Length: 326
Image (tube, rainbow, N blue to C red; front, side, top):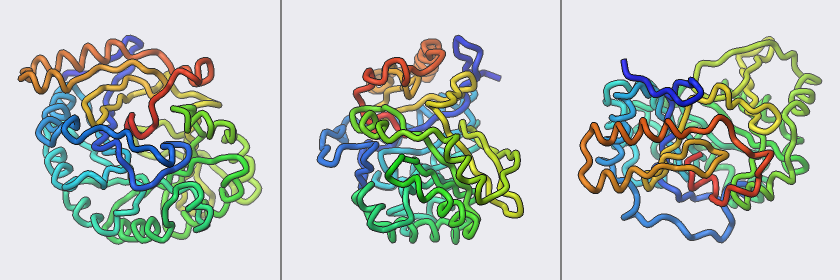
């Protein structure tokens, strides 16, 4: 069996696929409020090109693919793409990250297409605060979440970026919300990705403090959760709730990194905290063979760095999170 192994012996079996850099929200740690400098649709990989790339990753041992953006449901006919990818040999786990604003319209179609798991970004349960952070409407997100639950997605994971003085007073409320609805909860530290991320990092909160707050209200026990991501989990005694902590700053997880990202315009980003990338679009549009495409992917993985440099060089990343693919 073919496998992608990077220079540090890590098996790369997880790809985060951005299907658009556009989003219908403006989370203030992700994208500037007035930003309009998006990739042109003609520069996006089309569905056939995406399918070729994912098939090549599948032949090289990638088993998990997560559809991201921007907001992936902004991309027209996304369920059709999902169905094509779900049928590819080797792809065993197809999942979706979304802000859920459009999920109420698409949940059942996405489930039927072969997506089984979803992650939903939700940073506040208070409508006015949610609007302040995202410029969006909380009720649309909650409707999307309930539609996903009704459609049979499992697990549904809630991703909360915790920011000091902004929403850190809601961590217990969010845990109770997830207990009520049988969701999994994951807390995420802010990261200095682009100017917006660096500004948000001024509100950085070590998740050790969040865990300490939770322990005043719940008994936390060791826990595990299937998946390909970096969260460290606990479970809440007497409930089904699993809580994950994603700590790229306070406790980086680079030694177990198993993923790369593919942008909407065909660039492989080898590390969220580094600038290095390898472009596949020129190869695709020059008529490259499957073997040449695989060779390019293998060559890209050979350039994957050992770790990010968020702490040492927070100023080096100029791109926004939405440009990279979540």
